Length: 511
Ligand SMILES: Nc1ncnc2c1ncn2[C@@H]1O[C@H](COP(=O)(O)OP(=O)(O)O)[C@@H](O)[C@H]1O
Ligand SMILES: [Mg+2]
Image (tube, rainbow, N blue to C red):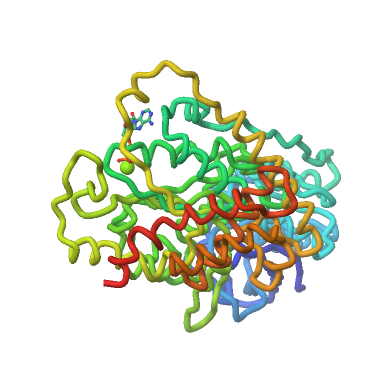
């Protein structure tokens, strides 16, 4: 008799349906699993055999063939233990209940305990989309699965619990839990601790409000890393959609903390500059996601930007632009999401003191040109705001003035972000940074004075065409923070200030 039931697989962060067919025929006792299983899937039969014996069932002594369809897609992981177990019980008539409207996922221990697996959120979402009524998941994954409404989630601790339910001996309750929005993990990081640096904080507020990428340039010890680490405390709250997307990524790699249902805080990833291109952008075979994907809907902080390998920075270009990265392999290609806010920090030159008011810079023009050229092409194209971070003055450090807290800043950021969401709701965009070129003139109306000023600045500073749209996007955010629909001269002039690299380092960039 052939028994059919359903499970899931994950390709990248997307789930796909897997049909499990078991056939028991007369012949020499043997058990074959076909349908491109990896070694973990092949070993499944050993776990299933032991679990069956230890839970009081009989492993059929016959010729068993288990097919995982679609047969031409690789199956990996241990999640097929539970569905194979159920399928064999069904095929050998030890359970008669129809199981076709359910999905089974879970690893088995030899005793019959059901252990957690990766990717449960994406699988539950897919199961719901495909119209399945029930999903049976390991108890430790139930929190994550219960985020998806409209499908019955059953949390299974061990196989006996499930089999006695299916044999109508006991009840099994549908699992449900409330989504808990956790407070930021590191509440200790607050902008109130950053003394002085008013202009830099202002620029970071604008960046947070419009989702703009930022490059901070300043001498060592000026507080670049300190401020970057506090950016999460002023970013707008995540939408539910964003939470689901980010959770699916962490879930697919088994990186969700146990008992967590959703990632409710924007991720902050700060890889060291020795990271490989694959580590940053994803790679390998089968392809795994890189830091840029783990930072999806959050912040990727590249400290000491000029120390990253040129190829890693080059590869960042496309995912920064598109918000996703596609990794192609001979047999398949996988797309990972990568909509991030990039924060980069670097010294102005190799010695760190170019432009410093008191410490002389010891670098030659050629050295500075070489240093800057590393980041000029690949990355600069994608950064809207360049901020010069001056070294901190003694008076600022010593002052007992009370600084603005992150909560106060984030109130303004949220207001400005809501204006953007409202403005772009027809276009499915959340922030100014995503504003496509063809919508710029419609979304960024300038007063006549502002237009004249922009024209003058554009010519006298020899701004490039790419700088043109960046200035307008940033000016749009500044006007939104100001609660104004029309962009006026002060908005434009402030936005032009953030083209620091185009102005100050133009000589070196062209060198
Ligand atoms: N504006 C500031 N207010 C308070 N402390 C500061 C400030 N700037 C720098 N510091 C102190 O100096 C240390 C070094 O700053 P850091 O952010 O690592 O500098 P950078 O990354 O620019 O080299 C910080 O950990 C902090 O203790
Ligand atoms: Mg630093």
